[in-house]
Image 1 (cartoon, rainbow, N blue to C red):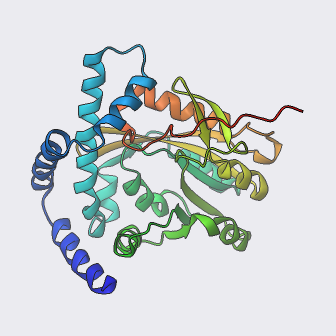
Image 2 (image 1 turned 120 degrees about the vertical axis):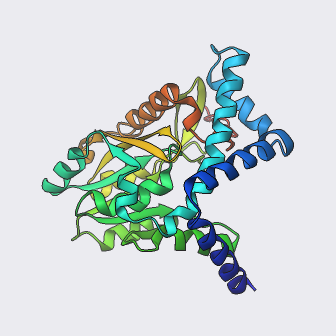
Length: 295
């Protein structure tokens, strides 16, 4: 049944992929009205996250950010099918890079690279374009989902007509170890909610005590990967600007937290400058820091 379901959904997404952008964004406007005003999808979660993250903003400013976030979210939904038939030139006409020479220089220096991107801009489009940026072998880390139809569909969309290799998060270290002799560039969504363990990286983020997965720091130090923060800002519908910021190109010299902390500050600065560009609908602050036992 899942195989049949996948092919039915794939045909539907293929149909959506040939829609002109004006029609997709007209649909997005309809989805926005339905999601925001009728279904009220995660409105309480989004509002609570915004209020806690921006205590200095008044109610009107919070409401404006909230509405723009939902508009952007619906745009992301209708932009996803375009990945099935959009060629490199199509991405290049819609994504501009302010400093692409940074990743080129890292390749020329023989560096492997982690692209650390938060849930901002259109991270799916950026992932599809990684093979076009440099001559690195390109991979992207993903987390397996329970729905087999959706799992297979997203892998199909992300890899269709692309040399991008998808690696499940639980096997990323093993796969990268296998590629020690290749120059690789890896995309990792590095702002997801961790398990809230004492071993996570805890720091203040957007005025709240926040836990972070430490995988990007641990793997970067173990396998000597440079870490680059990816700022992807929406400039308009279907238009994005990407800026790269080097977190470190000497990971083996970094102490505990000396990669995570500057990365967290990059994410924080990005959100403060572009508050409606981040994914506010996830429950980012559902854990409290574990109390350490007294000796």
